[in-house]
Image 1 (cartoon, one colour):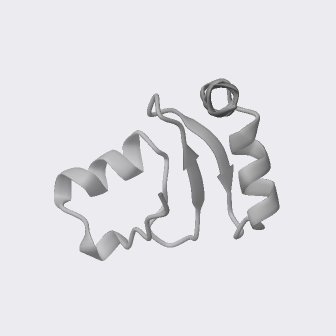
Image 2 (cartoon, helix red, strand yellow):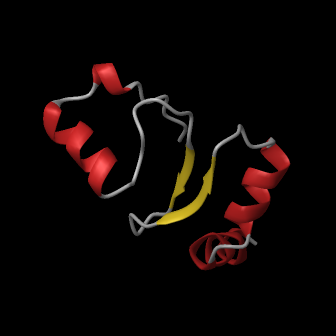
Image 3 (cartoon, helix red, strand yellow):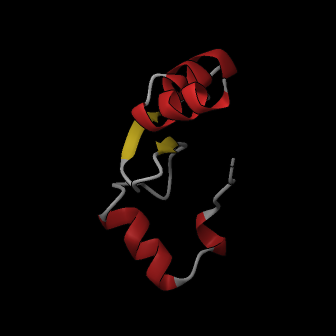
Length: 71
């Protein structure tokens, strides 16, 4: 799931969460890969090529388990 998040469209509570918990700045571009556990798995100040993004996802334990179960 890919979400574009624009600070001006967030509620006050979500803005506070983004700044405090995710350490995001309102004046910069950031890509976050957030795992199913809610933790930040990857952070980038530039767009990520699809191969890099999906390569990181495919290395995650939950994804590896999903791939084993698909066989």
